[in-house]
Length: 396
Image (tube, rainbow, N blue to C red; front, top):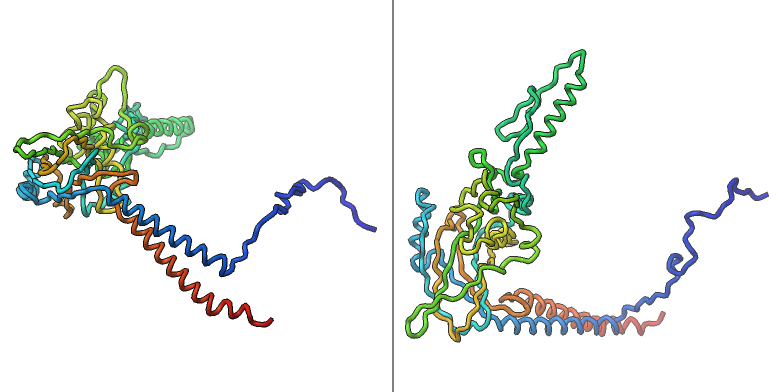
């Protein structure tokens, strides 16, 4: 006699009797033969080569010039001045002449470049306080502390040093709870700045704004580009200093802290500028009050770390209307210590297309990949003709 379950009911975990859940959907299983695979290899090889040639022709339509001004022109004097620690913060202006052999028509993008500057080090990339950059007051400077418990002290970093509570017969639990509450209040109020900024956190116990190694090493050279016409008259080339940062960075990731009825300098009271800066963060752009503080676009561009030790960052956008642009002159305050990290500094002028600036990596990568795929297709074709068909004709 067959056994029956005590509680006979439908199985709760049985899947529905559908084509999808029972894996009865129609499927196509391609037969990978020489007649189907080899044409695909030839097609992909030709396609990659054509894409590479198209991108290469597009890149060739851009113009770019790089001028290394570390020791060029009169900048060698500034280079030697930076070797003296006592004069490292003195301003220095240098002048470099260069010529454009071709017309840079349309909008020209003005970059500064650094060589052998490693922004991709993990500790360097972590040395920042995103809470500061987004405008949180508690990350900007230390807020007022509540009165701690008598048996609790603060160390030099305003952190809590809690002493053990002596047990007593009465109110020992209440005393411990009060002490724990006091310590929690003190620790929660000590939010500024983040410990990731160490050692660029305080100057004489005053918070740094912005803190961290990235902000401390911000590129601070300034440039003026002049155009010398055939008659010898120098004319300043218009340089737009806004619109150089990413939209998400400018409007989401970087915001100024706000306090009712207070100006930006008043908001930053109780903080100091980074060690290697010559002016505070609320005075970065004297010509535009709306481009100061954490929303300064030069600061935003610098805070986005580069992946390689040789990189360039956008400094401004040149809107030129001159038919010929030659004998350009970048001049600026040479106050960025490139020799401290054994690096080089460059000025880069470049036009762009829909593909971007002058970058030959992707076109060459496409052409090399296409060539390798075509070579592999030829080898597989030879193997298929000599070996594959012979095996197909063999009797079972």
